[in-house]
Image (cartoon, rainbow over the protein chains, first blue to last red):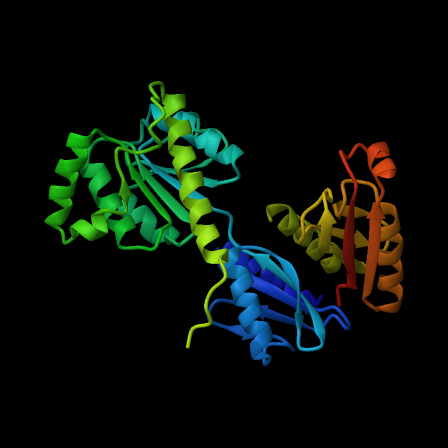
Length: 242
Length: 106
């Protein structure tokens, strides 16, 4: 491994950019393969680049036989991230449970009395409006967004921004009635019925959750399920596309 | 995944301090091996380690090979089988096999 490779891997992590390091086991020749770019000695080999990108999609490192060479594909994908909008009571259960599941957790709330690190030890807390915060953080395909405030002023802009991104999960706390009204409001800002269908609401698996901690479990259960199904679909054998 | 990046952070620090460094990576596993593919162990020329490739049973052998790789600069492919009996001794529920790639950081 080259020192520059090491630096590039660290840089990719900071930028939450997925990368696969392809290494030829016979001589340690390398390529750093991104979704839209490839660098290094092996970067000119289209078969290696394609295999590295596929491994990245599935999120699984593996050793592959490519041509006559054994190539190790080491996948570095950013950890899944959970953004919780609303530094409310349920968030105080949801944030530590998600951190335990190795999510990179951020709590966003513009209200200073709520968005404090004392209420949320060990996770990132941003005191800002969700749409502003999202812009600074950059939503990506390994991010989940959950809104918990019940307040349209706070939840709606967050949902609108999340729906216009490719986050893998969107959930919104609130009853069926609240959810139906939410759909009407968001239609006014151009969110169609098809787009709105991505929002899980009422949020969480239907396990009869009552307490904040139980609701947190039902939300995380749903996020785990959505994420696992998505990865399963990506790893299913694909028919070679033209 | 985050473990692997912690390893690379420490390896980067050692490198910046002018030390000779090697990285060992689990590249293939069979059966119930203790650490998944992609797990890494960083080793400096003083024999210091960060990370793990097995949870303890093969680290000693891997460090020795890593020190050799730091000296001669050649990558190495190592095969380890953990028998059920050995696995029991090191606290693993059952046996497994791992292949580990060791390379110097240049």
